[in-house]
Length: 320
Image (tube, rainbow, N blue to C red; front, side, top):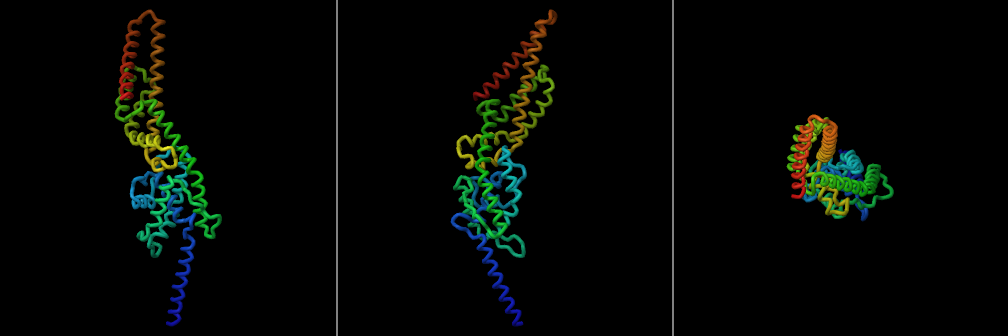
């Protein structure tokens, strides 16, 4: 019995000693904290996933960091999507590191959060630095998992700014293309109304040609996406010159809205080009024929009048 008591005492001392050593491994310095680094990486991933809201409370942001993210994100640049995919692959390990410090765990089970302060401090830091990763990882580490966190943190920190710059450029280019096509303040309802009229006119007069079905499909797909939300998210970038500071904004505006809009613009241009070519054929045909000249010219006049009226309505909506 006495030996058992001594053994238990030694075991408790050994557990305390191991626990102290493990805590020293993740202990923060003036320039580096592996737990804060994991939190910042999770915050970047959560922001790009659309789950982390910039104006949310720290508690809400913490939940967004620790809970699973959707696979489909709003980023349009391959550079930023690549960063998200790399963080997402390591998400479970990063979450485990964070939880090991802030949670009460027992028997391998995840416990309740008992000390959110390290997470809150890390979230405050990354927000205060405009979503840039500014910690300085140590040159060496004796623990492989912490070495991996340090190396990955450095890789993301170096790639985040160029990726954010590429994302901002792609989004502003899309915004310009949309405004060129639909006017300075486009709205989904107006676009659908005007282009549906164009579709009916082009099909009715036979000018849509082989693009008639594609045009109808493009209109249907566009009507099913959140175009206005994507436009608002992209427009918000115009007031922010620092690409990295807009990181949470890159989580807004689903890519399906972008693709559907691009497809609608492209299909509309093809239909208009086909209408122009069809009118040219009618004109040339009318000039070369002696019979049915009045009928051909009347058809051309009707087509030109209808197109002129429709584009007059489009211009009015652009100016509105």
